[in-house]
Image (tube, rainbow, N blue to C red):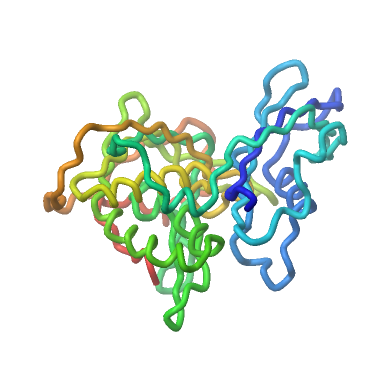
Length: 320
């Protein structure tokens, strides 16, 4: 069985001496040529996640990370086979010097295999790019959410007629691409596990609103920063589900535009000692949090006026 999800880390050499900066839409265009979707799936979530954009290393060298999420279909183009073949990204001509497979777990191992003797209790999560999260209001308009509640952070699963019809993010990747007999029970467990996940501040990594110029002069509104996620209560199966969720979070990214490089996260886990069994302490509803803004020109005022700085309680559904 081929390992999935698959992640590659590529080192690329830029053959262009003068070029405008690499744009998210240029990277997205390249991967759409590598890994096209059928026309009927054009509006569906991608089978792949671009974990940020090529990062300069100096002296015309770039570092880039990509993930393929599908359990059944291999990628039409394997990045490992492109070493030495220049790839055009916007005005840049990038030649892959090396492509290394950096993740080789199957969904079966990721979701069902026994883990080590120490239960994972907490993790530090830091954004690598802006993270764009949206929901639709009663009129169908998309509203940006700039406060990462744990349940929204891990994505969503969409059900219809008793079956799974789609999804996004970490849990959506499992719903859409993992073997159904494995995905169903695991997703049921995750509903319980996520009620036990609490978020707390990470010193020196304050959450802030972020704006990024996107294709067609659109301004993408999201958040950046870091925080700590902690599993409070539960038993060992919840801890193992939490560990799998964190792996998937880094692989699949978070938010709406992961295929275009937004929503890339770094997750550093911390294992604890003996895991106690219990239930989370009831939390009082808090008022909306204050989010600091990054310095820069004021763009997208109309969009910003509809942004939601959420209270700790989650108002949506994981399964809808």
